[in-house]
Length: 417
Ligand SMILES: Cc1cc2nc3c(=O)[nH]c(=O)nc-3n(C[C@H](O)[C@H](O)[C@H](O)COP(=O)(O)OP(=O)(O)OC[C@H]3O[C@@H](n4cnc5c(N)ncnc54)[C@H](O)[C@@H]3O)c2cc1C
Image (cartoon, rainbow, N blue to C red; front, side, top):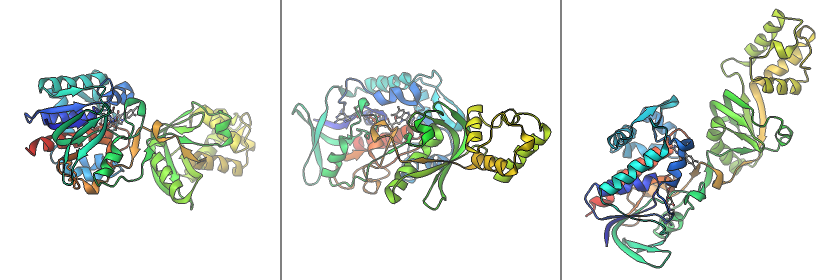
């Protein structure tokens, strides 16, 4: 008999186990895989973008999936507390662009190992290679868990920290959703977020733009009326199947929702020169021709955007790259200005949830106490991490959500005794 059992050894479960262990309770952490923190170890390209230092309002804005729910948990444990927590464990963090925080060592394993050392110090029992198959509960409360082997272990409180469905090789295979439903919870529709987009445009199929990266472009998802649903100004990448890169990942959930609402394909608009409008772009193209009327346009306009992109857009505008500017019609220059500002790619979907960075949807936050992560449906039951209907953009927001909700769940589960 344990006081608290935590199921799942990702960031939320590790933090929950540390928080429950710090309350001097008998704590068991159960993990189905042979290692703890598998996804954490590969996060942030192996560097682990562990949290973000932007003000809380900004953090919440970067968590489009129910970020506002986190205001209340943040009043107990927030991003600054995460930074202090890891510094105390001997893992100093450094700030990079957009407030992103990484270990100074650039090693995600340092974050994982610090959590494992802390669990050892707090004498948390750990059971690896032990998939949980169900929660044991009666009418009013949870009483324990059953392992796939049939073994049953009882506990006063259970924290479910089994993650979502993204990248299942790391162990997150969505096991917790049916348990939540059995306990009386609503699980909202699951969908991929932070995921590359698929397109069958001829220039994608021909792979002619594969590997081309556009820096700091404004990418918008358009609705059927051509109005932008969302715009993100960041880098993006053309791939052999469609579009990827930070701006695209951020836009992806809006593509999923638009397809669900109105069907596909969906238009994604790329603005290569977001700092100036279309007329200014036209004037800029025109004035550089006037400076050098006899020079080939590909040389006159080089430097405006990456060369491969310029040559592709020239072709789209039916302008010969070797043509000199002096004979070019204003109509053609306007057409290039338009393409630079409003190039549209039709996308018909996204890669599947298994290939997404983060799961959209999950255990409804309406049925969770925001200050404790306790279930409003079953006594002794707690949820934390990606299994909840909370999802953020890339940038440290998802691990922040996992660590914050994990801290609250572990602390509160231990305090019921
Ligand atoms: C490649 C990649 C890079 C990422 N990089 C970042 C980043 O840098 N910053 C950021 O903020 N977010 C990042 N994310 C997202 C972030 O890693 C996740 O949101 C976060 O790990 C979720 O934490 P979690 O504890 O809820 O679940 P998970 O990390 O998914 O952990 C769940 C654990 O539960 C275990 N489990 C599952 N079912 C059972 C069962 N039946 N019995 C026992 N155990 C079970 C699993 O084996 C797993 O170990 C990244 C995601 C990916 C895929």
